Image 1: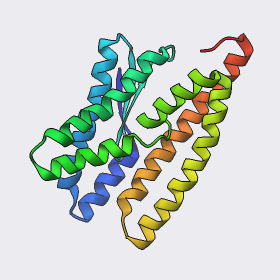
Image 2 (image 1 turned 120 degrees about the vertical axis):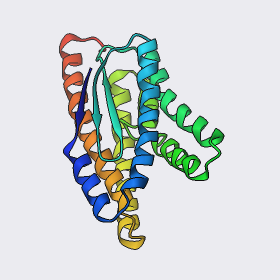
Image 3 (image 1 turned 45 degrees about the vertical axis):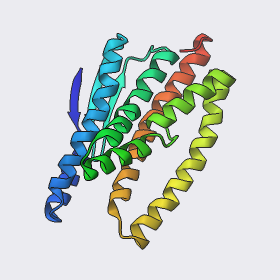
Image 4 (image 1 turned 90 degrees about the horizontal axis):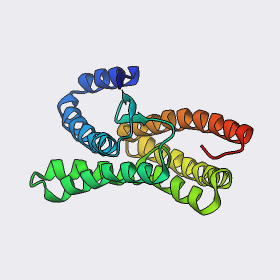
Length: 196
């Protein structure tokens, strides 16, 4: 397993240092890492190889082996939000509880590759088959990206909340990366005539 640090994380840390918000970010990022560790530990228990962990500006993205079953992917996907929800409910510190609530709510947004998106994608593939499931999710994803883009503009311009802007950049980077991988999988799938 390789661990990479994306340059956006370095830029974001520098930005937070300038505005004197670095301490809050470190607290937030510790809980993000705990959330991701729940995924990684679950994957390890299920004997799924973790290929790469990338530390991004406001999140951590773990990449697993390609031939993972839908059931294992589903279980791994739900364990992160469950961990964040448990922390949100049982931590007595109000700030820590709020941070974990935000992490939980953010990750259940059904945009792939966020956890909610992974779960919805698995359900659509199971319901409609691989090719039609991916196409159906593609339509859902476009709608959700439009909603997220409008929300980003509102939060950034009207509320002067730049955190949401960084969150959207993070999500759009992940979406772009996953779309490229999905296109390759679809091409291979069509060539060999089997579901990967």
